Length: 87
Length: 520
Image (tube, rainbow over all chains, first blue to last red; front, side, top):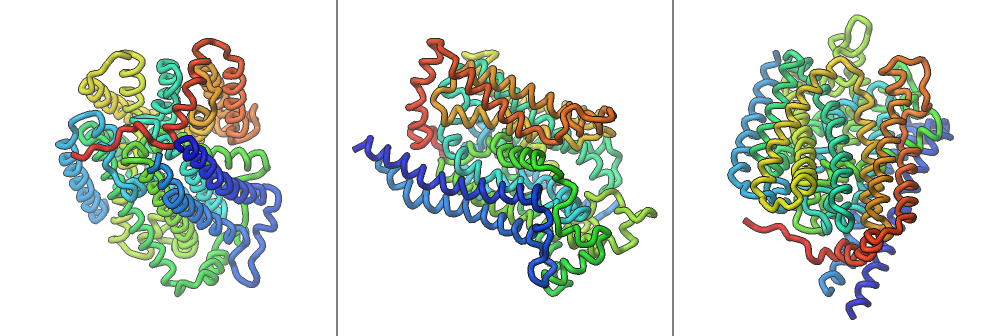
């Protein structure tokens, strides 16, 4: 019973952590690579506004980063903690 | 002399000294000195962590960078912020579950104490001292402008107050000073931003449009500028910022001040929220300054540049939207920020000296907590004096590279050792120690040979190492050498260390066996 819970715990952690890590690394490095390779695209304005794609993407990233931390805390409390209590 | 700023700052100092007095009465043992007894809540710790990150350098520096080149400021902010989910997802909980006072506790959990403690303490102290120099010099210059105090006097005041806070109040005082400052800074920055946006009826479009019209770079301020020129530099800076945070000793230390891994998680989520919000504000402050400060001759010198330098953008903007009162408040907060950040740094350095070097290397059998506590107090005074001395020596040096170097060392030495010790079964003492040293030497060498030191500081015509940011090369060097040496290590000691991994991993996930914060 104990080993089963432990294995379940590790698998669950992987299922939660890997996708979140993937989202963060991809979105951040796509930002960095866009800056390096396609700065012109980032400087274009969105429709008729004075806000560029770069600024919009930057602000989106700030919210995404915060959102990922919230998701992780929520999932950990909801899914991981009950198993930890059992062990 | 700005009377309002001085009186507000004096109020802050009196309050913090009272907190130090209150904290000193509660400090009975090592636990309370290093970790505030583990009684800080996730929310409080989140504020304190965000306070560590919202230094005067990032408040004034990033808003100044936005003021000067717009979008580039955002690249920096996001880089600093993206380190946090990394800390949360892979470092925070195992760190809390395996360590007690310093990250060396974790790195040396199943490895040989002496070499790993020496390496980790060296990595910590290098990061802390580089950071301290940058903060002290910045502090001296800032206070010179804000309060008309001579540079030396400013450095002495900061150094002395910091020694008082840390020696007597330990982590309890350091945390509360940081929390109060974080609240004041968030409040001040919010107020400035709201007052600025109010002038534009909170219309983002008109706001950015006006800034573009007034700035000499015009539309380039909403586009990537000179900060990143080639892909290698871009990735290298990205790596340093992303993984550097997870190797900063003064940040990692804060995870030991909470009760358990649940609170450690919560602290990061709160901290990320506060820091992200703060960076959004600095962006608005920078753009606000373009509109309201760069167009007003009161804030400019005869060449049309900002009085002081670009880092004064936020301070001038405070005056432009809120008059002398807001200027005084923001100046006082900026001073308070420096004090709080250097205190945290010094405490991290002092615990590396007393807990890692003294109690585990010099006197490995020392079980006397009082003695270790005294050593860390002496170490605090020692570091304070060093900080003051270096602050004075580096007054007229170009110190722009120092925070970059600190981040490079954190990402290239501290982070790989922490990460591999937590997650890689085959790590051995030899691998970590020699690989770590090779990584540390590579980082420092590459920074010295890079344009920021070789050209800007030593005045050679061209740099030997062409990139400003070494992390891509130095981080991979450390990882490769630590892994290769560990794999080649066939000693009996290495076998024992590998055998201990499963138990360590179990504890790092479950937190079973950790010392919980004791209620007083």
